[in-house]
Image 1 (tube, one colour):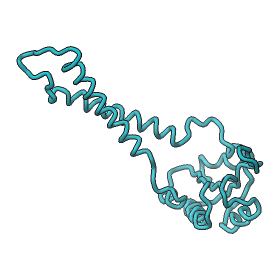
Image 2: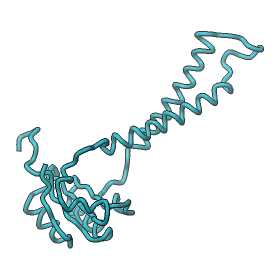
Image 3: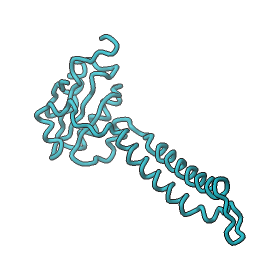
Image 4: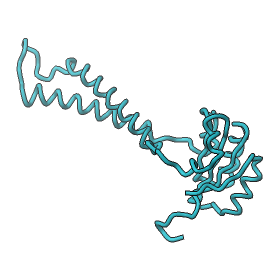
Length: 181
């Protein structure tokens, strides 16, 4: 395949009848060396992220960065306005009266941390996503009701159409389907 070209299919999708079999299938796929895969269920399934091999998220670091930006920005803005740009000695207090800076600094820290959490979560999840290739499967409509799906993408280095199809068939899947772009 040429660099930058798209594979002929998006991947292979296995449908399971229970969350336990989905977790077992995801664990087996991860143990077999597949890394570019995703699972779909109608509700959060405990242990599924570990079975897929996703242990760490960058979201806490994004939130920390947003919080630090709010902390530093809020304090620096107040310091600049009261000490450098518009110094007013009110009541004999020092120009750099840090206890007065705490409420605004705290509020900006919380505001920017929460905002970066929302925007970071959307960005890391690839949202908004009005279209995804798995929507082409007719059986995928059950993912919002009672279906449990595991999709191994064709961009996975270990992916081979026939070998991956055989592998997914050994996982006690109800159905294994080809996902087109």
